[in-house]
Image 1: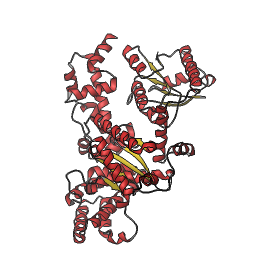
Image 2: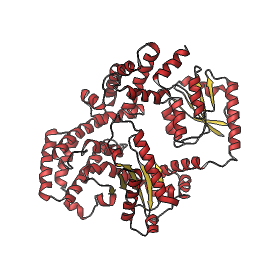
Image 3: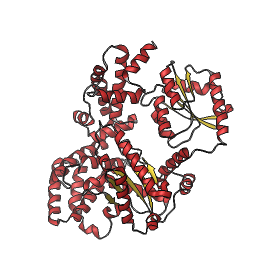
Image 4: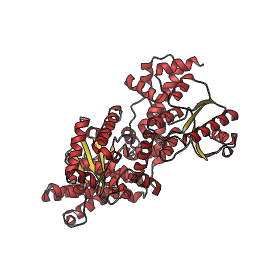
Length: 531
């Protein structure tokens, strides 16, 4: 049976397509349906299908954007059928460019649909005899490898990965990034960062030579983390006749020279066997978020930073730290300030850099545990990100007392709101703000201050509800308003950009192209020509 999915934001359309023909007698099984392209994309990252039927206009991610994304990222080579309520030659042109099987008009005719299904089935049978291209094979391998890295795999996936990567007794996961990629501006164009990420990835594959499959592009999948993954096995250093540390230095220097920027390596802990890679991956992620607490380095090694349950325990200021943690948990602001004063007095008396490192580590892990206590399903990596972003940022001395005070007060509020689960009212307020003030300079921090909710927590619950960041949601809302103005007024492009909240007209045009596939002026001309 061939696998098919339907992507349409109108439930009656989905049900109508399912009932229009006898799919099973045609050799198809509808395995899932989705209300927008983003949901479908997440599914396709982990599931292979043979046919995708998608509406061209949907919220969050359109059918055309879904088509572009799966073709550009090689997530799926499934036959793609675009459905639309109106004929538009420009949409059809774009669809054809990205290898769309058919562009059909609603209401969908049963005979037309049967013709498409039979054509796709015939092609699939023919393709069974054709070898898969190396490019597509590599794309599937990388998806399987990322599954192993994140601990989301079965025996079949593990075997596929083991076909290309040596199963060593000593394996480390290494996360690699360009140093500048950690300084992220919400309004920055990511194209340069993506290009640099690709360059580092290509350099890593060249460095690995015959072991090129040990490198993987963008394993985190995070829209603001531009990482390259690297599976280090003991034999890689052994072939060169050098130590692990020397290998890491050699890798760092090669990638930095090749890319023309300083790269950062986050070396995870040593694990036994490829099946345990996710444990090493987790520690590498932890290093990324903890680097703000440490002196600047090019290589961060988990073995040098781990808190060990041995003699180091006697150096931890357990009483002082536990009092501080308790005050944060109770959201007792006066007590928070008092315990920080005491904590820094105790640290000052002891004095050494390694001593401070151990205690800072202990504080961070205790803070993570506080959040985990509120919600067993809490994303600890997300908590690490919040702690990292809100604490020892660029230009702030590591261990600054005043900065720790500011952070502790904010984090205590965050935990309090996590405990109370204040999401419903806050999200209603934010929705209303976007609806009536989308043209203003809206930010999570500003909205958090206005409605007395921690901005980090607000960002979390917003993403959980809408499946995208606040910034992306606001951008899409503004662009929808811009479309209304393009079609219903004679305002100039720069006037529309300003009226929907964009100070920079070039930025507005670029965002519009990304969403609609053409410039605002061309969109207006095409749409008005169809009226």
